[in-house]
Image (cartoon, helix red, strand yellow):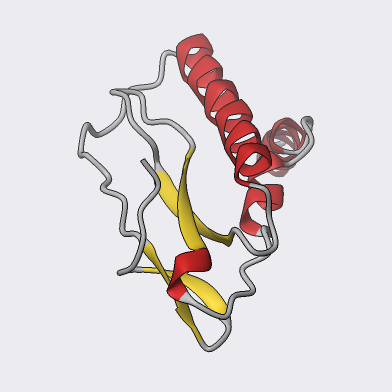
Length: 117
């Protein structure tokens, strides 16, 4: 009986996490190809229950349209905010700062470089 409940619970959690198109996967898959630091930006992603983003992800303006990236990130963040409100989730209130992004070995990476405003 206990095994059945564990399987049922695991299946329910899995189904909930895959019910929507996975916007986070799309954000993580943004093209990061670059030839200079000037092409690298970060985008605020997600939401914390106390406010502010969960993290920042790098992308390349040479390969991605900033407006498209911002719209995708905003959509994901709003979904996270709605989920937190629905579930009554509490979380830490630590501020996550934008690490900026730089071009390293032909790929935009977080840390140093340009920050989105």
